[in-house]
Amino acid sequence: MLKEVTVDRVYLAQGVTDLRKSIDGLAALVKEEFELDLFSSSLFVFCNRARQVENSSMGS
Image (cartoon, rainbow, N blue to C red):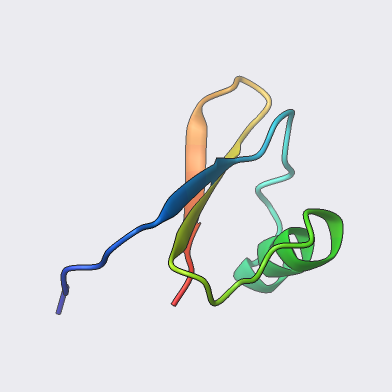
């Protein structure tokens, strides 16, 4: 079931992200390298080598 979510900010990761990482790997990237709160009402967007948007992760 989908619910309506309010997104305050959208973060686009610059450069290439290895999208073979699990959701835990991407969450660690957001928390440790970007020093952002995973549970904020934000959308995190990652791109593959071809610069196509391939994966996104919502905060709470």
